[in-house]
Image (cartoon, rainbow, N blue to C red; front, side):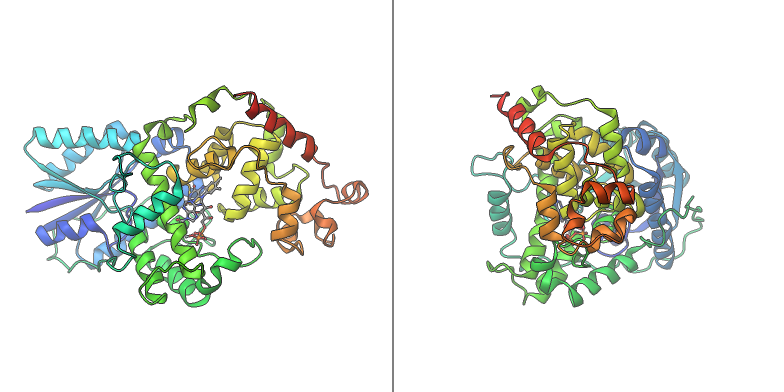
Length: 464
Ligand SMILES: Cc1cc2nc3c(=O)[nH]c(=O)nc-3n(C[C@H](O)[C@H](O)[C@H](O)COP(=O)(O)OP(=O)(O)OC[C@H]3O[C@@H](n4cnc5c(N)ncnc54)[C@H](O)[C@@H]3O)c2cc1C
């Protein structure tokens, strides 16, 4: 038996369900399809994310070489090119079937259905495995068999299924196969953001170990402070599959004596975030409109969003005149990542204070994040815009200045990213005086926070 193993966002050899299964069954030839046109146009990925993925493919290729698994690289500008390319490779290498780990987005599911049908037509086998989440997205259901739309009951049921986390272990690396007479292709990598985000499963494991050793115990008290290195920074690696959620879960439960107990402490708070990731994939799978640019709450389609190119551009450039918002937006541009607390602050500011459609923000994030991920990004945006599952109630609008005073009290983070305010002390740094703004060249606020908050609340009320 020889299998063509199609890697997608599972770029690792350790704890890779499809790879392990295929290598148990016989010989394996790997393949990765480079779909730049699709990634850029349909997925709205930026160069940072594309290069991060390709650098991880290159790192994977090196790991596979140690297992004697060759990795073929093929350019497939569009998803619709996938079936022919894969069939061709399967024929060239005399493969009996195809294996992959399932992706849950609608375009990916349609692409895979076409590939499955093409292989079946030729009498070749296809095996799709659940791997991307700890529990398959469709496994957790309400008592009536429906998909959840609220996190807390979802988490309760999720935890019941995994029996308090006792049974989740990560798999190892498959045994090396005999050498095949097939040469691996070069991976077309660049060097975008490589210093911030080195690629590969070893780097991901190193980050996980460092987080578990040094930060997880304080996670519940530190995770909201952007100036502190208090979170794992694993999201880019989880998004491309350089590490699996099972590896994360197993490591965190090991350090909390094998249990996820009910007390709020570092490990349980962190594990809860891993379940948020599962929840958003559950939502993506259960409600197709999430993959199709629609709001989860359909009535919010009627909301009178503002159309202001100049306000949107100021937000993107980090020149809104709200220091914490601008610091977050500049962090995104500089390192392709933003702290979670800031993602919530800047998203609420765009969708509430500026009343600009969440799709604009979602798109900008996808174009700049190295961890860009449809399920979590859409979930986070719709939460912030009060249009999504279990969203923030529309009348609870963060005041970005109070958030800044609370989570960056000394202004350390603002100073790191907003050069103009380098010599401004707290508390003034959270909302500099007109004099300071004109002295430092830092812009006036685009909108008054109080009246713009009220405008957003009124717009939501008008939907009723
Ligand atoms: C508007 C908005 C957009 C977002 N876009 C993305 C995105 O494109 N990709 C992405 O991975 N996350 C996204 N998030 C969720 C979250 O901000 C990031 O996962 C987190 O900041 C990553 O940092 P970390 O790896 O240090 O997380 P940690 O705090 O160490 O958490 C561990 C892991 O849990 C998962 N996680 C944590 N918080 C969340 C959450 N709220 N929702 C879903 N999963 C979570 C991530 O995989 C993360 O790596 C978004 C949140 C918001 C509010």
